[in-house]
Image (cartoon, rainbow, N blue to C red; front, top):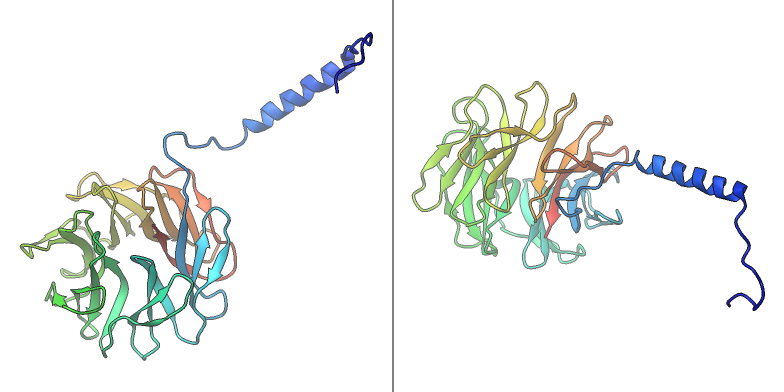
Length: 308
């Protein structure tokens, strides 16, 4: 409704003007204390899948990283861990339901849980699905001192052994073009990062030092490899070029940071840290800035993986 004809608008009093200016200046000052939003990269979106012993036993959970809404996907007495996304719309994970670790699959709501590949061999750590969604790289433990890399199709058939080395090999991760797999191996005495060319079977060592370098993850753009290392005295996250050069620290603190994975766009890293005394899940920018905390409880929250 407009003003009635003949009525004059009241002029704000000096007291009102001064109070408004003071309030505006206070708001401006407070806003300068807030962390600046990243302008060069988009905010993280989507969801993650992870394992947690929040219920007293390790189970698989699915979390929306914006709302933090979380859904529990498994509920049993076994140890369910190492979750990963399995295209076109499933999750995979490892569990000791048969007495030895095997890979299981399920729908994204937790339904239809079943063994991916039946057998009495022990499959270790997180398998890695090829970029075209047709094959899976995984680790089979042959005995207490040896494990090797294998390939199979997503139905668990057409198995192919990639390596045959005395030692432990862990954590395979495909290159985006599907021609190579990066992994960690203790051949030589300590864990180092290696890459195998799938056509020639040639293995190239990318790190060579007296420290533990492990859990490599190839970046979505193919230019970097994310890994964890204890080279500064505690566990930190690093990236390096795909030839092993230009190593850069992502985290630098006095606590442990590990079990990291890339976001699908390559701008963010989800990882585990014990900053607060127990394992919680965080997100951090690839430049080491803009850290977000996703979980906050007294449980052990581990092995996060982004869902595309």
